Length: 213
Ligand code: AP5
Image (cartoon, rainbow, N blue to C red; front, side, top):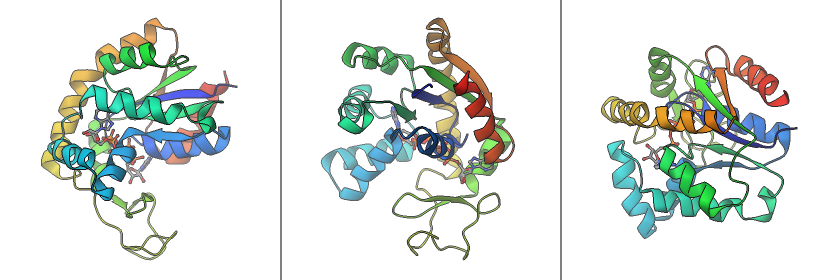
């Protein structure tokens, strides 16, 4: 069974949602550079302060920072049997640096999540998060009580980078970077295209079929 998976896709494609499902299925950690950076911001570290400015502008945090972060995380014992990478690598230079610095960095499968722009905007604008990272959607995955996290009772908010202006920038950056990254994984023979439209459970089912092949 495939155990090292990279998820590629636009902001709001559902990478985090699918990554959590696959991590449960396979018993491997879900490693998301966006979540790691947001944890640095929440902890008020120097890195967090620098990263917040960049994230709030919709640009990418410098490669050396995210590659080092990912390599350190994947070197821990719980990632020895595999991992689900969400939001990393997100440009071909990161993939190449990652492969130079980490033995076994080439995934078994890179799932390229395809979903149209209108749906991406709908998913992002309806997303609500709790301070501990639990994710909801006002229509497709609402909490039991409006505005309150089911898991820990904390208040749900919108992410600072989910404003219309920043989302437009994030999508622009994505479109610039995704082509060469997809080509890279295609040339390595690990790329699989995933229809990420429809309900999250349907996307999960299609993803499982692809990683089981
Ligand atoms: P990051 O946190 O990685 O954000 P992203 O890639 O823009 O992706 P999102 O988290 O917005 O969306 P997602 O695809 O995970 O969707 P989700 O599952 O939440 O990065 C943020 C920033 O950090 C970057 O802009 C950059 O500055 C920096 N950064 C991070 N990694 C970096 C790197 N490697 N290099 C440089 N900089 C980096 O779903 C979205 C919503 O839709 C949710 O509400 C969910 O409930 C709902 N939903 C999910 N699936 C479905 C479905 N099938 N149907 C209906 N609703 C659904």
